[in-house]
Amino acid sequence: MLDTVRSINQTAAFNRWAGFEVTHAADGEAELRMPWRDEVGQYAGFLHAGLIGAMLDTACGFAASTVAGNVLASHFSVNCLAPAVGRAFVARGRVVKAGRKQVFAVAELFAEGEGDAPPKLVATGSAILVPVPAN
Picture (tube, rainbow, N blue to C red):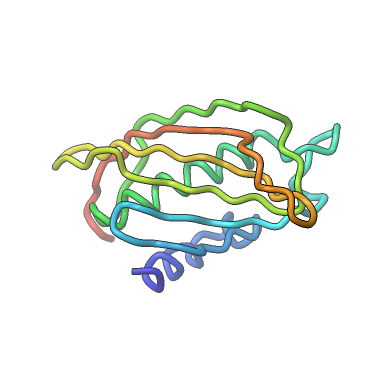
């Protein structure tokens, strides 16, 4: 399953540009990591909210894809909890409920600090995804 999700990730030019790396995929779960670089920051030096949303959306979508195949988001929401500052960011998505017509998923975004500091929760998100036929 991990290889399949990694392959899907590599087909998305945006994900490649952003540096998303899929680190985990299992039944109803997905995790991705993105290292910090200046191009993903905003004016104050924090991770840009657009990238926060993209990581949460992608983690939800990949988690949903492990149980429903190809999916598209029909609704998505983001909650920014703290400034996103770190050397890397990890988004963990999981399916809450998968139905035939909709998949409900949630994700959390963590900032990895330096050394032994535990990752800090900086944002959460939720998505409703709709299964779609393969191309």
